[in-house]
Image (cartoon, rainbow, N blue to C red; front, side, top):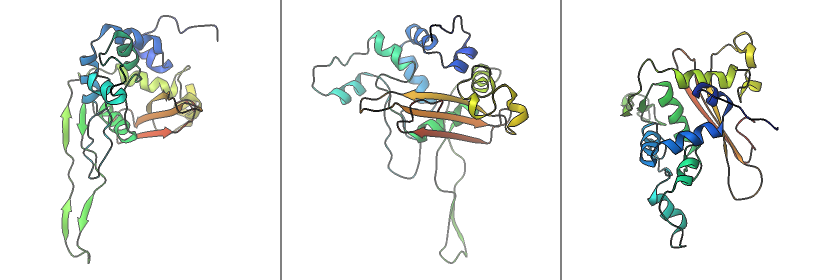
Length: 226
């Protein structure tokens, strides 16, 4: 396009999905800090579901060894890997359910809940309740209750003039055209299997008092914005 985003605040960087902002952020942080944050938000760790799941991994020496084996690839995590990990690339591998838990944890200001497919179990003749699931906290991140920065950024993804999902929710006139105040984030997952990149989208709503979190993953959908 022959232009850049220019100077960006974190809110604007989230709205615009500005890779360079997060490259710089990754360069300033350690890989341990990035991974600790990712895990705390539900990425690369078990979700708690009742079925066997692919947990995936974050970018570290163990994941590099698992990915490349004895091919001679250095298992260290250099600066380049850390910078790529800051935008979700490098060796990061997450499931759609983990992305949904991630959206839920952001909505809950750091409280990560156990994911479950099970509401309750009743007797075959419906005469008695055998088991009923209750909400269970898996972990708690320290996010200040007054920290609305990422929420404001995710809101602008939907309603901002340059929001990457604005075309699907009404853009700047969102509050007039879409009845639910949604906060979201688009993502594009590159791969080496040929064809278009994968598209991902997470959101939670309503903004002020979230009740639902959603993750959508489109295989070879080209971009998260599509």
